[in-house]
Length: 115
Image (cartoon, rainbow, N blue to C red; front, side, top):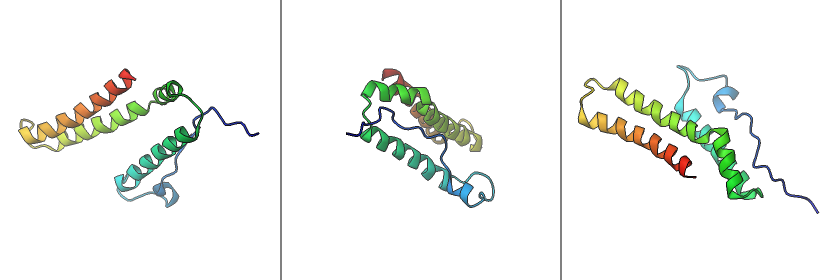
């Protein structure tokens, strides 16, 4: 009988289509990178479904890998970009948008602290 692995997955690198095609013009293209990030998370979800690890091991693996900090980094960077693009930093609508993105980053941190 074949034994099921207790490891979730060991993904050391995800090759994006930009890397396969030699890059994109003008720097990193979010239309390429965002789907690559989603694909990596879907691979992780599939590994969790098929793996034999319990929920504590899964959460600890996610924390050790820094998955939550990666999400936080995306939200923080987006919030900073919104504020950098604003002509008037006191514009309520733009400030609210940036604050919501920053709040999403805090929510991700709190969710992982709670776990």
